[in-house]
Image (cartoon, rainbow, N blue to C red; front, side):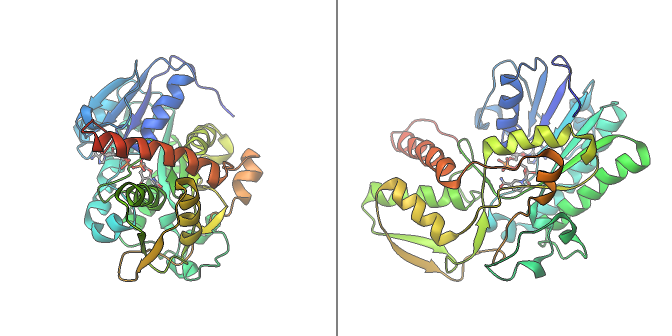
Length: 338
Ligand code: NAD
């Protein structure tokens, strides 16, 4: 495991969003003094603003902006992407594919700037969809991405960007790290507006039902589809460990929980947290993605001796409380995330 100097310049792209915002906070909390946070969103819309971090508002699909943000960087973390939950990635495949521009320019700019390490946030959506047709799936292991049959749009962009990372190491010698995130959730994430993922959407629907006296909840699909969900603190810790492990250079690795639950079970937990029981209104025509998906954590356990381990109930409790506060603040006319 290599160490970074606390005064080295760290660049975090996508820092106005959920995971990269949390990553900036993670490094700031650990005493890093030079963090450059970048996002195309206007600053007032960033989910977290970390005191002391340099914040730049730039569109990273332009090469010249990538060069500007990578100047003097020792490490570059690229988490910028046009993304969202199933509702977004099934509907806006072209936007998802266009995120290839961000990684293409960022990795070249990082290389030209002489950065020592480059991180790319890939996704479980790279995995062959033929292996995910049963809710009782076996966990997906890293080799399951090939032969390739990734999620249309979003998954193919991630797969291609992974390939860039692999070749910048093999051909040009820049150390790259690639983590395939499986659904990440937690406070300061998108919770409304169409890009939110299942944990946030379900918490919000329960909160809304309670607040408005509604006795039912709309669920996308039949509720039997299965997933695993990783709490944000596990994600930031995992990014740091993967980036600094020389055994993982240019090697895609799963970063996700292996606690498989059905969407119905996720709803049960959210209902318990809210102290309500709602009738379930299953929307079979809504976007629902693959039937089942879980993370096989054999490789991360073997190489890092750790896997994301925050129990879903514990992480969801913190997330629920945070979303409830956002919901109430919005209702009171106050400014909120999203
Ligand atoms: P997010 O939408 O909250 O954050 C992404 C940020 O990137 C946004 O703030 C957005 O404004 C920014 N961005 C988009 N296009 C940009 C551009 N051209 N220039 C500069 N900034 C731009 O998403 P997130 O959940 O924090 O995801 C972060 C990364 O992790 C993404 O690459 C995503 O694909 C990946 N990922 C996330 C999950 C998850 O469950 N959240 C799962 C798998 C992979």
